[in-house]
Amino acid sequence: MEFYFILVEPAVPGNIGASARAIKTMGFKLLRLVRPCNYLDEEAVKMAHGSVDILQKSEIYTSFNEAREDIDLVIGTTAKKRSTRADYHNCSDLPGLIRDKGDSIKSVGIVFGREESGLTNSELKICDLVTRIPMIADYPSLNLAQAVMVYAYILSYLILKPGGIMRSIRNEEGLKELKRKTDIILTNLAIDKNPTLYHRIMERLIILGEDDIHLLHSIANKFQEKYGK
Image 1 (cartoon, rainbow, N blue to C red):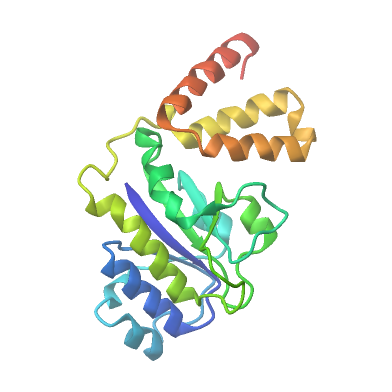
Image 2 (cartoon, rainbow, N blue to C red):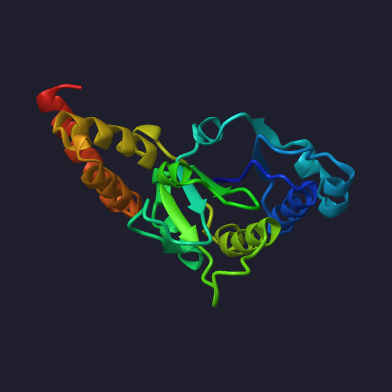
């Protein structure tokens, strides 16, 4: 399984460098940057310390949608709960949630927002899951690089623990494909005209385990056979 750490519009070069160091220390290597500041700035290189290769190989995108397009499971991060989602998950729950997906996913993206304001409501809405680091007080919050370190440490259990890495996957039975099929079904049933219900169904779909994902694929396939695509 591939893990992508995505930083949206990071404005401080040192935070990007420190984030690169954090993910490499925990065994990860893939960093995506959306409209970043100078990520190869002297400060960024200094803070990366031994992880400059992560900076140099960073993938640069002009939009968040572009950065998440090819990822099966997109996990947003936020410091505060907002009205855009019904479910907010504790970051410590992520290893279990991801492991339960089994072969239904092959890539995971962890998305971090701007230093000053985080991810926007619209960006959080298009994430599959939204998570937060529980803290005693809402302020002061962790800075960007610290938050990346916390998530990298928690997710490292998936690659350090024997059996943590997922096996091969057939895309037609994966979570991303199930989301596509479910969207078609909900649209055919006109449920998409009720945004609250539509998003709630899609939100609950994301936390299903592998067996339930495969079961719903069977139901979706039967629906398409009977009513057409």
